[in-house]
Image 1 (cartoon, one colour):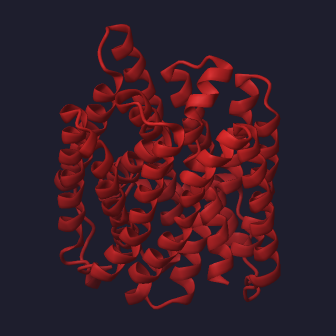
Image 2 (cartoon, rainbow, N blue to C red):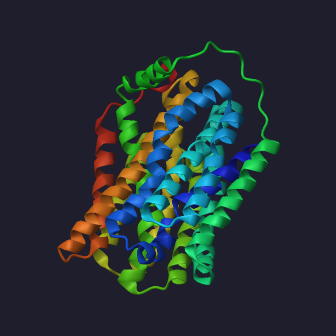
Length: 393
């Protein structure tokens, strides 16, 4: 059942990283600025993040299976709209639908793992799930670059939409849950009040701020800027850029299971998360200012491997809240994470445009901006209150 659910995660990962390879043909066809390209990439993540609260309610009230089966057809519809897009507005509308459809993909996996696996195995199993789900990013490396060169960027959306339909069918056939016990009906107001209660806990804010920058830095690079950077800074071809994206994606597949196995437990986990975020900030700063082909090829691979520490953040959330709040806590965390992705992609698109207007190299501004956001996130996470020790929950 978990493997079937993971197929939706894989397609979600593919959809959110298409911009890095499709950026050049989309800019050519629709005459997009860097800011418009950033908005296109963020159009997946804004609805994806915003829908997490509703998905959390749906999972708690109706279960994992019914929630993902109800939402995922929107990703198929969005793929078709994107493939048929005759204007930039239609292209963005397709991305919005895809983001809404993919919204429950990883959330249902984390809740499923929390409900059906021992607490001590949460990080390891989540890491394995992230690793398998990351296979979707392999599709948007060399294979997608080859497909676009052989056909068009539109065919890429048709292929991903078809695979999303297959993932929906696998979930429909193989995922079955125990019946959800009858529960009193909640009003929308009561449901949102329970989410609001999470925000009254002082340690929630440090967790949310960190969630908004860590994964966002990886996806902003892999899902948006990597292809344009290599093609414009170093004259790489589309397929050569896809090769680097493919290797970065492969590294990320190993990162999540690796950090899941290395999870130091609640006593040291927060120190690891802080230290790894600072390390990422340093790497992005070096990436920004060296302008070395070697660094620009090897750097993304290292960042891809380090991105696996996201699984430690999920374990941090799992340990910070009581079991009764697991579904909604994961939903709030995931919402902040993907709103952070959308915000970072929009922000980096803006600063890239501003840098270009001033005759500066836009990718230096983009990567330095990401480094600064990572540093701010690590500082907030370190200084804001930490959750109580697990024994006191």
